[in-house]
Length: 76
Image (cartoon, rainbow, N blue to C red; front, side, top):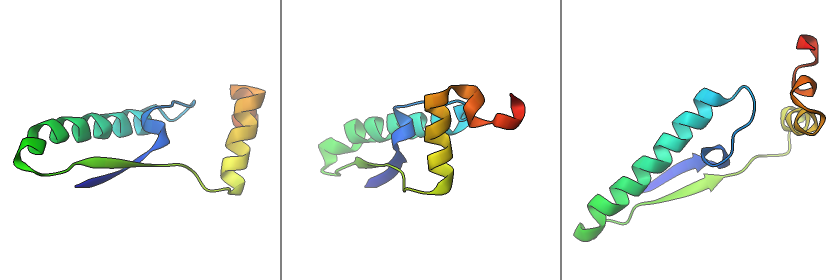
C-alpha cells in the first residue's frame, strides 16, 4: 500500500491548518496500518510529495520570508 502525502504532513504554514491536519492524520494512519498489516506481509509506506515551481508557490515562499502579511498583502 502506498499513500501519497505532502511535506505539509510535517510542516505547517499560515492559512493551511485544515490541510496540514488532514495530511498529518494520513501519516498517522499510514504508520498504524504498517504496524497492523506488516505481520501479515503487507507493506505500507508513504510518498511525501514536495512542490512544483509555480507562480503561486513563489508567492507563498516570498510571503513566508516576508512574514504572514506578505502572504496576503490585501489583508495588511
